[in-house]
Length: 141
Image (cartoon, rainbow, N blue to C red; front, side, top):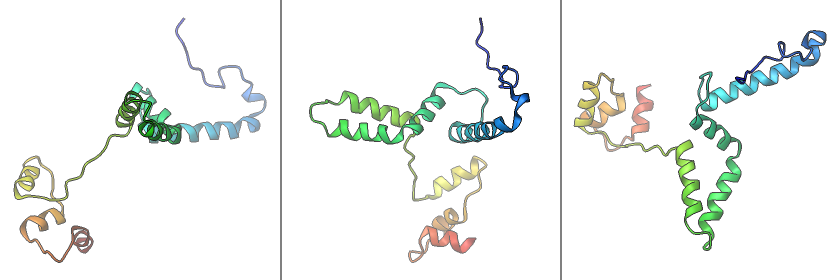
């Protein structure tokens, strides 16, 4: 038999008999569903990576403690730490940011149909060594 998910109203829980009793539970369930969708994406179906990310977010502190403990334990070897770090990379990959903009990068961005930011234009065409990129961005706002 195919597994089915029924709403509480159609599952025979008795919501109609005492709606005020079940209203707070419904509010909490909607809140949890909203948080879940914000954390892993808004699709109705959750894939394995999204489920892994959600579970890792729920257990972030023990996961971090395990990674550190395994990395610091000389007898544990590298296997456990490598697995933990691969899980961490799968659920929360590192993001690198390039701080400099060259003329070639700016031209490539325009050719892709993207609009360069004011600070990118300024960095390439009118660099001012006394003004940081953050200050230039603040001035343009």
